[in-house]
Length: 219
Image 1 (tube, helix red, strand yellow):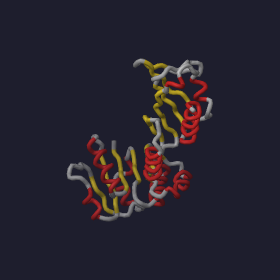
Image 2: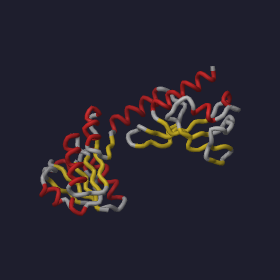
Image 3: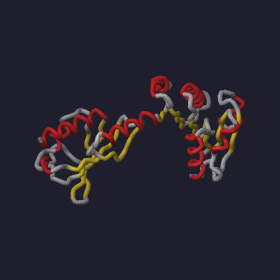
Image 4: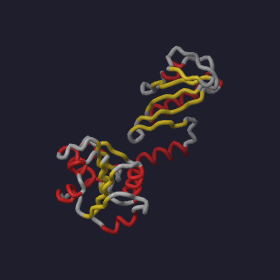
């Protein structure tokens, strides 16, 4: 695919290298020529110096024939505007923008853009790790708004129905139950056994409610 990366900071340079190593045709755009020095020597792609708001610069980067664009500068405003231009003017099918300041997330969301907020996501991961959570995250969607957690059923929950566990939160949805190495689609009536591994899709609020429930039942 032909992919344009707007912004050649630490994130942009690493992303560009990863994409080029996967065989994509990558063009990096930045208005600071010195920023291209951060590109790894193994990067195989093009660089275009200039204002990313410039039509001439964007078209020189190949935006008219691009399959994807990532706007990953340190400015949420630039990322939002470039992302909007890519979607609405050049009809690029896959556009992703970086959220640098969590306070600006509503602005990016208003544009309806795919967004990655490393700051918010990282803060949530650190919070969970410091909290000593007994749940293992196996999949994270978006910026962590919805995740799939892996839970090993403790002894004191053996013999209870899965539905009892899930009833503590409206956001908890069962994904799979693995017992003795074999997985199945779970039903609320399924009786749990100690050591069962249950994958549950839920939100941060949902997993907190589930954690509190397990602690209460154990007590």
